[in-house]
Image (cartoon, rainbow, N blue to C red; front, side):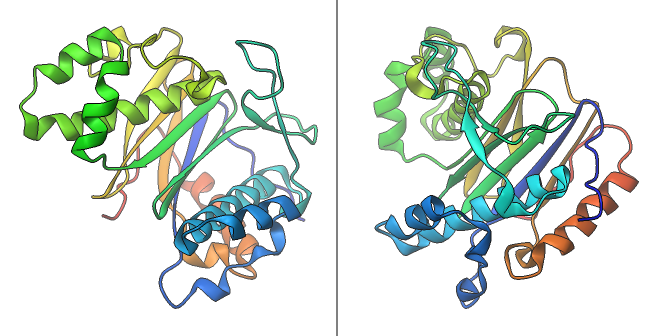
Length: 264
C-alpha cells in the first residue's frame, strides 16, 4: 500500500454503487469478502439481491481500505454499544484501530447501494420508491407531525413525499445507532429542517429515478461533500487501485461544499 488519502476534516464522502450490469456479474471480485459475507451473498432467494449485497460490501471494503491504507480483506468490523440498551448491536464500526478514525454507513436496496464515509457518526439510507400499499401501511406509525404533512398532500404527491421522509428517518436512526429498534414515531424527519432532531444534519440525496436516498451526519453541515457513482470496474479484479486513483483525484480537486449530480 502507498498511503491512504486522508479524508478532509469535516468532509462527507458519498458513493452510489449499482449492481453489475447484465453480462458482467461473473467479473465481480468476491475475494475481498470474508466467509460470512460470501455466505450471506449466496443465501438470497433472488440472485440479483445477492449481487447487490456483494457489490455493496466489496465497495465498502475497498473504500475503507483505500482510506485506511490496508488491503480490503484486512478491514474488520464490530458493532458499537447500542445507545438504548448497551448491547453490542449499535452502529457498525471498523475494528482495527486507526487514527484519525473513520465512520461509515452502508445501505442497499433493489439494485442500488449507498456508502457514506466521514470523520464523525454518519447514517445513510437508500430505498426503492415505495408502493402505495406501503405508504398506507406505514404512515400510521410515523411521528404525528409527519402524518399531518402527508395527510395534507394530494394522493399523487404522498407516495414521493413518504419515500423521501422514510429514507431520512432510516438514515438518522442508523446514524444514532439504534436502527428501527427506536420507534419511528419518536423523531420528526419531515419536510421542515428546523423541526428535525437537533445536533444532526439530514440531507436528501439524488439517487436516480427509482430510488430515494438520504444521509444523516452528526453535527453541522459538512465542510465538503461529494456524491459520486462508483465505476463498475472498481468492483472487479484490480479495482482497488483504480478506486484509489479516483479518490486521490477527487481529494485533489475538491474545493468547498456541494454535491455532484448523479446520472439517472
